[in-house]
Length: 88
Image: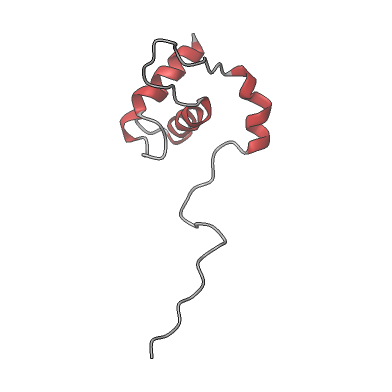
């Protein structure tokens, strides 16, 4: 009576944007970004360096404001703070 459903899409999403850095590029530069171990005192774990770098590249390449950073990246404050730390 009802039409059969189509099989699920296994080719991936067409709306998810590609990252600025592919895996080969990231593997060649990942040693430049320190990712310290969590503090023995506890606290919130640090965000990985790659998503922060992707957010920074989004702002620098697109010319957008930090507060307009899409939600697929870490918070604007985190990305800005990492850029500040890495440039110092």
